[in-house]
Image (cartoon, rainbow, N blue to C red):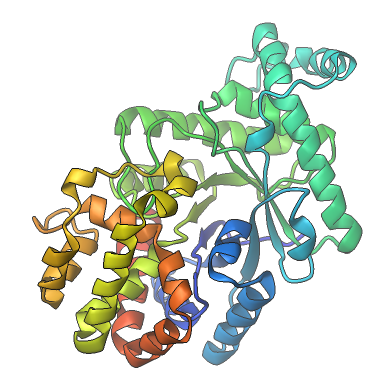
Length: 411
């Protein structure tokens, strides 16, 4: 299997132009004594929206690594894949996020569920377990998660068949579902994955609270940190108890800009000595827009035009992300107003700086899901990225390093 560093960050790069800027952030982190692996993640949905393929993401990632002579561990992620689309990613990826959320709640056969419950009942007497696992929880988990566990096994088997050397990383994701998994349920899910032979290395549960795209965590921070610590303890214990990889760690999806929980997460992973995978994904695209606006001239004009188009297509652009955004239409500025903004005003509204009274999270969330608009511009957008390269690269690097890596991994 492919083993990452204790810390890893899924950065995303919608248009494949910011790899070098992202790597610079990892170099800055390494200079502070912390090594982290970079994972370039892009989902099938994102590829379809802007007309790219996994081969494009691989080419861009490899080119960035070569250009900077980067020596660290890196991966290209087949993000949120399942059995229906995994094949197109297999030749190009070495990190596979197997998404089983759609299968949670589907019932396994009665015979399969009965066998699972019988095999797991001894866990109720395991005094080494960091969480109480009673018979009722085992039965509920079998009914709720067993079908999804078996689906993950099918996807893993397909990948392994094509890559028999096994040099890839396995993540299982269940974050895009209605209810969070309890620590006891997480333990049983990991037990089930071990039973069906899935060597999961990162597990992405659904946590309590809202993890909206590109904005801060919404919820009870203290309650989240208590939940996160319990899940981290379960994950570390499960690796030993069930023979899963020692590198097993929690993965936080839609983790970009969750500034209010970063310090607490950092304290917990240091205290427990555990790892962490954080997905920042679309944040890079927003830093491209900030860099364009900051550059002024043609860059600012294009950033304004993208917002104007996005505003006219709100239902279309937001529908695929309805579960991970909360946008108040009343708080969105009118395009005519935005068209009168100077660079400072546009950047102030978009950059996630909670101390800036101009910051507008609704404006930011709409643009977060509007990368399709830029994709439709094709060469015009890519040419603008090159024209404003200096401004964009500075923003991409500093966003990753100063706002994400420092509070999480340095403190």
